[in-house]
Amino acid sequence: MTRPEPVSTTPPERDPYADGVRSSVDPPASAVHAAVELALAEDVGHPGDLTSLLLPPATMTARIVARAAGKLAGRACATEVFAQVDPAVSVSWQANDGDPVAAGQTLATVRGPQASVLTAERSALNFLSHLSGIATEVARYVAAAAAAGPAGARIRDTRKTTPGLRLLEKAAVRAGGGHNHRMGLSDWVMFKDNHLADMTIADGVAAARQRWPDRPVYVECDRIDQVDDALAAGADALLLDNMTPEQVRACVARTAGHDCLLEVSGGITPETVAEYAATGVHYVSVGRLTNSAPALDIALDVDEAPRTASIAPSRD
Image (cartoon, rainbow, N blue to C red; front, side, top):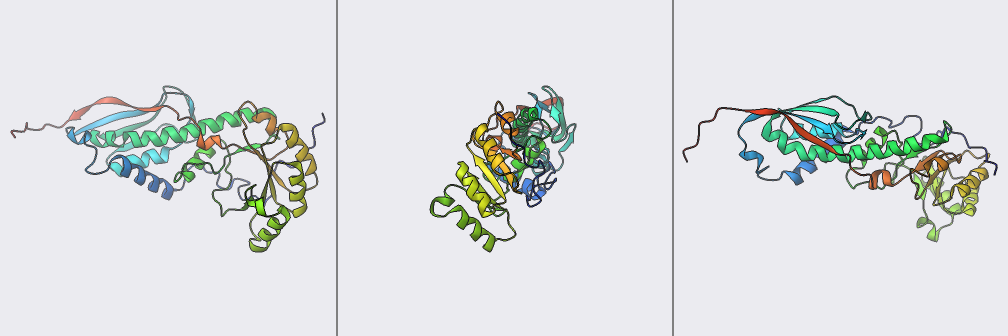
């Protein structure tokens, strides 16, 4: 079977995430602060960490350690947890978001009042483990897709994110070497099957052009005839959903001569991603990157026995 000529491997300029836009692996500071504030509110509560409040005053030194190999993400969140619990806690990082980490590797050294360190421990590790797990899963897909060669598709996430953590999780996707799909519903127009239940593709694209002329228009297609309709309507991008690699290649061939971004999604695994990436599409999007990635095992190991201040025994 002759492989069709791939469309341009450079996404059209109308794609709002092309050419390094939002390419930083760091999430917005405001999103980090808000997420950490909420996490501590649910974990610490009032009157606080009852167990740690029983500890004598002491200074603790501990290490954040990777228990398994993967990709690091979530540094900003972990640092913010310790800072919000107690500004006297210092965190010194030995690895950056996006760095590969080995099992047993020290990621950071934490030093401060032992009660504060232990109060912050679980929330900090929750962010690190969850976000590093996403980055690790993304890196797995990116590595598998690389078998398609330099002209292969890029790996993208979806909107299947944890409510309230989207900006953090999408930063973790970037740390893993992936790219972001739209951040929210206001980024671009995207007609999916449920939108088209009472509207034709042509009517939908025309209405979008009239009301939102500055927004890209995507059309989700799960049949080849929908690809023809979307191209005729002048859609900017097609999302080829739940198609086989052979069907995707047929759709790619139909788009020859059209300046149209192509993305494929639906049940794509690390074992099949290279074949999809080689079809000629620009992107392969995978929901499990954010909604099903297993957490990376990261722990806090006490490195130095706390130095307890001298306290007169209570006579109560």
